[in-house]
Amino acid sequence: MNNITIQPFKFKHLPLLHEILSSRQYETICDVDMKTLPKIGYIVLLGKTPVAAGFLRRLEPCFAQIDTLASNAYLGSIIRHQCLSMVVDTLIEDAKRLKIKGIISLTKSKDVLKRAADLGFIELDDKIIALGLK
Image 1 (cartoon, helix red, strand yellow):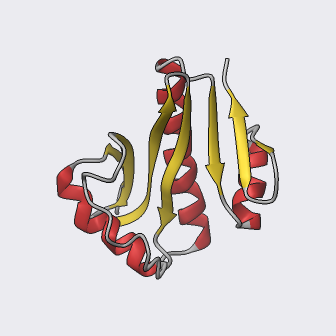
Image 2 (image 1 turned 180 degrees about the vertical axis):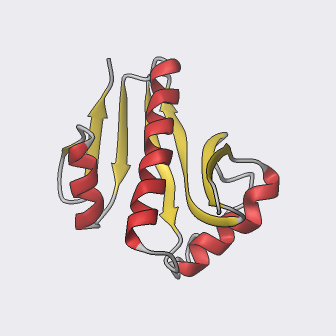
Image 3 (image 1 turned 90 degrees about the vertical axis):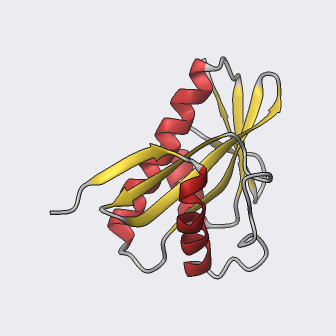
């Protein structure tokens, strides 16, 4: 039986992130490297298969953005949703620990907007969502 694990993102995970991004055909961001990725990030693996990844980019001393959040398009929606939730929950916990006062994210996806609303994010316009932290 394969286990689902969440791990802090390290250099060794870069090919796995490229695999996730390629599955989504994100041509413009498939060339990410360790210099362009935020320092805080996580990847979720199902056994050795990458399922989801995401990062927390510090914008100001007290604000951050969820960045490069993606899931493996070759896997089912239930496992992708579960793993994306693991990443986002972990990033939110890190943000709270770092005393971040708010998180924003950019998306056009109606599914992401719905999931974000379930976490307490509010929609600022049709592409930006925000979460205030206490």
